[in-house]
Image 1 (cartoon, one colour):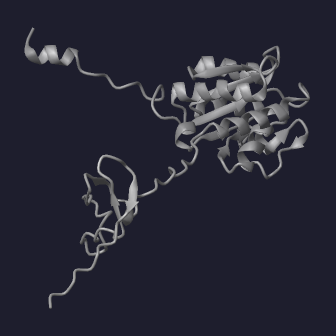
Image 2: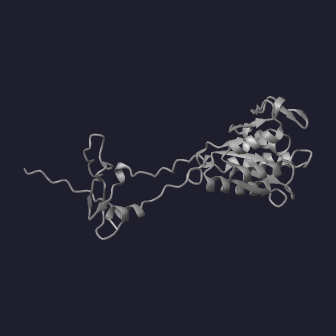
Image 3: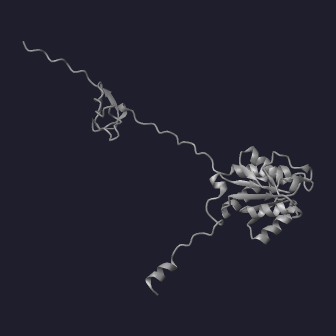
Length: 250
């Protein structure tokens, strides 16, 4: 085998796109996607809007929902000529991955989303809200985001008519999820610097540090403080004995 071929065998392969690397949650650029149906769909958007996170998605034509019309406050775009099922498919397709929330049984919209994820080969994570608290669900979803390197997350779950806890669960889960993202680092506690009069002394002589801690603004060392001296062999200070004035010669 030639040297070139041998080197080629050991080249480090780059990870496949969308399967690793920094995620939207880690970078603080996570986008939440939903079709704004009642229940989990609106709960996750309510949390994202409240926290100022990027969010959106597509919905059925006419912004139709089980309670009438989707309010304009939700930043979703209607698909002309399409129903709710197609909006689920489009959100699965356009997102990097889907978190599917359910309570006991996977049915209706969560089941449709699961089928579309399998058909389109898109990553997904099942989250059983019947066994997990909303904070625990957030950690499961956060691990999914980081493992797959997701930047856009589609979240879907039961409608309000299917579960009376759907909206609150979706809302609390996303609030906890976005709270697991990057936090602002606090500056480290400042260390106390030595003053000019607290320079280190050894064997009765003062030493000036290279940083000029014992010097003035001009860089010149300050004079040794008068009135005190260090006893030899101990760390104690004793008052300097006053010297007797020399008598002047006649």
